[in-house]
Image (cartoon, rainbow, N blue to C red):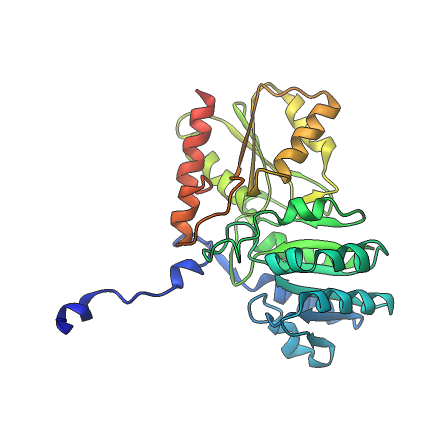
Length: 335
């Protein structure tokens, strides 16, 4: 082997697979969840933190460093994590339990259902790597977590868009009486909603911008993408409204129905989740039950499939949730 040639080849790494969801040059804030929880816990000694060997990777390590006596490392045992969180809540504490979304939902579902939700306990489950925010394949991609959790009574579900959403959501979910499942963006998280005079309000959808041709109803990462697509289509004189729904359950049906009835336009529901059982089907059900008829209706979510492993930008293109491909899809639906 020619070592001189080999040295010129780029070293293969996994960095592209675990890269930040932020675009190059985009504004970001580091560890918004960890910092917001740290600030809130300063005046709330009843707040405790638990994790299943993933403090560093859910930004809970900041809490652990500041309040070691209130931090509990449960090891790689998600069922134990949820059971312990439920027990602490019974004793009057407010547990924040963090892990990856695939582990928190798929491995610990029955414990969330029976230990936490059935007794309406005050546990806040905050899970990283939601949807297609990692390239490590189906073992780590939580593309069906919302579908699973929507079926559990008493459980509030939050899917924040950016760092601002997370920062403002933390104290509100802490003060909400009852269990909460929040999809967690960790590390260097994009900051976009401060440009839209936005304030998170649990249970409420927010119209971020108006437009006469398309109404995008979105949550999580796809709200950021929808805002980017709206800017791109504006150059083609296509008006795109974006209604952000950070709370998936209970869904703000009144705001959704009012937006659809406001004027005839194409409705696109965009979500970083399977098209099965997520925001799209929740919106479709609400519109049908309320008799609200859009001019057209499309789902822009992840396919009902086990997704590939690879670099995130490639996967977002492949599955239709990148800025470029989502914009092309909306143009095609407009005809």
